[in-house]
Length: 321
Ligand code: GLV
Image (tube, rainbow, N blue to C red):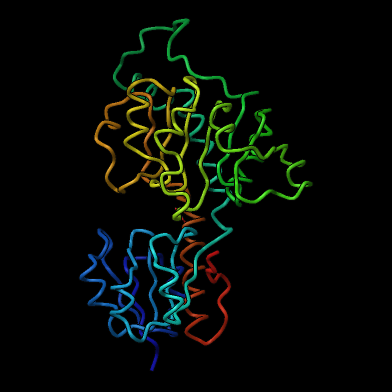
């Protein structure tokens, strides 16, 4: 008998092809996530789980599936899963690292430039037919080239963002628990500095850390106070790393110049006031959203799932620190 698998929401045919003939799957709907109750009910008799970052895979769910062997997350981040508990129960957890690095770094730069140069507001202005002629001070933004970029979290995505900063002749500083090898620092032109220095000295601060107990609210009200009035904060990692209420207050009080956010503390909810502020650009968690990358992620997750169910070591097991 083929192992039974739950796919929590509709996925691409390219990924289903990997599963066809090897597992028997049940797939969730296209238009919404399954509720916790539905997940617990549907997982009961399954050996494999293909899930998304919007699915909360907690103890309750893990306990509901005594035969579960693998949780294949279709994302690089895995803060949606209680990984220590899954591992304790002998369940393998996998993720999709590497393939979304460049795509997410591209989106970071799109958001940084859109925020610095006020692109969404300027676009709305034209659509509203408010453009009545060139003006010396129309939609003034912040200079990017030659400024200082502070990167919080110098993993794969942080490094890819740093690489692109070279084209903008920027000074790059970074904060990370681990120092990069010297050759890599030299090739990226990046200097490791304490977090407080990074926040108080950078023109742009971009967050690329994992979400865990030491990074939750890392960018707290106190840390935001260290930032320059002219500075811009970009977050393309996980919402809870930034205190969204404190950030909203800082944007409203013009304590920092702007923010570009692809992620939110209580996704899909967004702090109400942010909808009404002109100095923030809001995106619906689309860091890795290109056709090619999202298909590659789903294929990678499907492959990991099948590998574990076939008794093999998966390509991308999660080993938390
Ligand atoms: C996206 O946010 C991911 O973790 O893959």
